[in-house]
Length: 420
Image 1 (cartoon, rainbow, N blue to C red):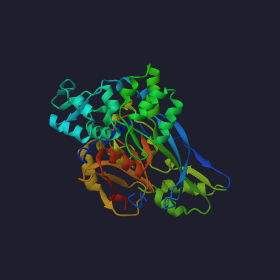
Image 2: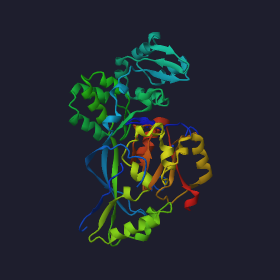
Image 3: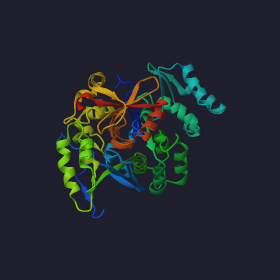
Image 4: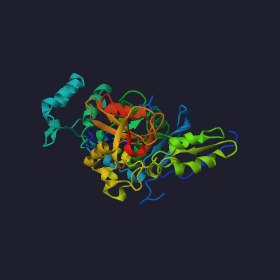
C-alpha cells in the first residue's frame, strides 16, 4: 500500500495482492442521565509514537443503529510526531521518474494532461531529461510545477505516485477542507504562500491531494517555518468512536457483535458492568477491539523497533487484527496471499467487527485491505512506512483515496474460516 502521509500515496504499498498488507489510555466516560455502505459498505515490545490531537469543532455525529449498538463519533485530526519529520526529506530537487516508460510514452502522458503549448514546449526540452535503467527522469522547473492546472497535476502525479522512487508522489499529503482552513489560521504564513499552497492542491470531494511540499518549503525563510508547515499539512483526519450503553441496551447482542474472534468472555463482563451505571455510560470502542488495534489506533509506527516498522502496511495490519503478538510473516507478500486463500472466505452480508475488507481495481488486483469495525467505519493503515498511522476512517474516504490512485475501486468482505 502506498503511503499518503499525510504521506498518502504509499497508500498503496503494493499494486497487487502478491505485491501484497497509542495506545489509547484507558478511559470510560460515564454520564448521569443520560453497513459498510449497506454491507459493502496489554503486552508488547514497546508503545508506538504518541501523537498530537486536535479536535475539530462541530464534528460530532452518530452512526446508524445496528448490531454494533448506539455509536457516537467525534472527528479529530492527529499530527505526526516531530521526531519523525525531517525537513531535509522534503527539500530535495524535484525529479519525476516515469518508470519503465519510453520518452514517447512520457510525452503521451503530457499530452493526456493537456498542458498549455508553452508548458509542453518547456517540458520537451532535452536539458530537463535524463535516461536511467529505471526509465526517464524529467526535472520540472518551479514555474512549470506552479503553472500546472489541477487536471494536469492529477494526470501526471497519479502516474508518478505508482512508483516508490517518486517519494513526494508515492507519499502524498491528503487534506480535508477544514485542514486548509486551519493552515490559514495557524501557520502564520503570508497570504502569498497560502495562495501558492492552494494552487498546488488537486483532487475532488472532501479529500484533496498535495504533493509539492518541496516547492512550498523553498519559499519559506527558515527550518522552523518549514517544520511548522509540514506538521500542519501532515494532520490526518480520523474520529473517536464511543459506544453508548444504558439499561435498555441489548447486552447479548452487543457481546455477540463486539466479542467476535472468540473474545466474548473478555467483552461480556465489561459491557455488563457498564449497563449497571445509573443514567447510562459511554465507552471508547478502542477498549472493545483486540489488543493489536487498541495499542495502535491513532498512532504512528516506531522506527526504533527495527526495519519491520517501516514495512508494516495495510495487509500486515488487517491480517494481524486479532493477533497478539502480531505475525511477522504477514510482512511477506507471498505469505499474505497464502493466508487469504487458505483461511478467509468471501461473505455477502451481515458484516462483523473484525471482517477483512479487500479493495480491488477494475482488473481485480488488490490495492488495499482494512478491517471492518461498524456501519461504514474501518480500521486502516493506508500504506507502509512510519508516516502512515493506524486510523478509524469512513469506507467512503478510504475508497476516495484509492480511487485517486487507481481509478474505480470495488470492495469485498471476507471472514476468517475459524470464526463462523
